Image 1: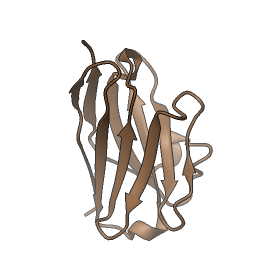
Image 2: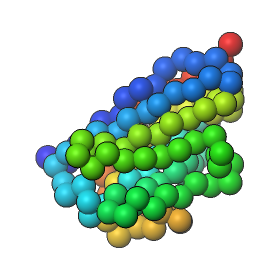
Image 3: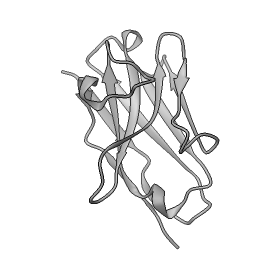
Image 4: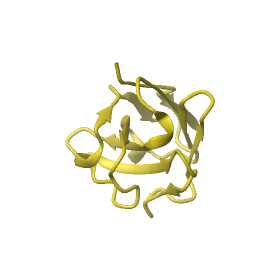
Length: 125
């Protein structure tokens, strides 16, 4: 059974940091790319970062470059999203998703086959 389980969300003050985790199981981790998406209330889902598990190549949209780092631990089948200098506009539900054929550069959510249930991040003072 394929599972992606996010954790690490919570309430953080502006300027603070959080590390989200995405634990994967039930599929061959190395064959996939894992992306992080976020969706704020009333807004469309947005790609935040993506990593190719096999070679570690990463992708970041310009909106988050410099504040977000994605990494993976192949031994633990886990992908991490380290977020720093958080802003209130980073408040959203954060989801990880897996794609075997999709492109990290495009981060087309419809090409990601498996999704986690999400973890909530709230940036507020």
